[in-house]
Length: 403
Image (cartoon, rainbow, N blue to C red):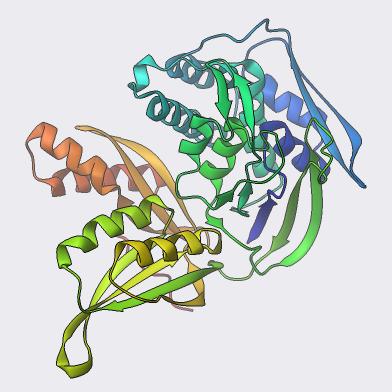
């Protein structure tokens, strides 16, 4: 399996992703031809080698003849993609990315999807970034994408809605559940387009996975930072087997003197802080007192924050911690259409075979309540639709083949 690991030590933007892909061997002329499949005129790509600090990388410029920032809606962009002469998988992933962008903006502004106008990310250069990135990743044969914790930068920026803190609200919404951190660099290091591309396509986050390294490439950002090289590093290699691997911090506290009703708000706060999972186990403590072990799984970047929450919102005096290795099925999320509406479905991969189809519970619950049908009806419809889209059987056993 060929994997691409994006090391976002100086953040990520759409043009940095394109630069890293070109630096890794994608010909800019071929990428230009792929983007021309959008069927809109006036998009021009060129690439150059530039210095960022003491290092070199590839800077890709996306220039358009479009004047200003058009206020396109999601249906406008989807219509362009539907008409485009691009591979079906590229179209599907591009629509997923723009839908996530729309959902993030809708969440940030507190409005519905149909009322969202894209500003910067609705321009032709953003569409070129998205389509070019997806096409380049597939052209290099990258079957899985992993991403490091993402450097967001700091300070503030001037956007279409005025002065905004870094990260901008839309970017922050896209990064929910993703390892990220701020820094002393007073600049927007991670853009909404860059965040949307990587967080939609990634199947793993954290340290670089074990792999036989084949190539290292660098995509350059537009400015030369004083503090560090403004580069996105792409590391390409081969991994054996069909599993992703990473490390997590496991936090534990054993509690016997807390009102059980207080666990639920603590768990909510932990998930909001970025915990990967939180669960409770019943235990028997000294003097045969019944107790509860609170276990939190978290990326190292948010482990301190989660430990602080446990100490401040429970009755424990201490938290234990250790690092654990994880083997994971690579996964992605697709949106399928059922007779009752759209449902997100998480797909688990073993090699090139889909072994798990898991409809999103909240989507199924919402549609079931609206239609007045049992939730299992929506669940089965979503699973059947996802299986049909993948060309797989819905009753395929959820485990890898022997051997």
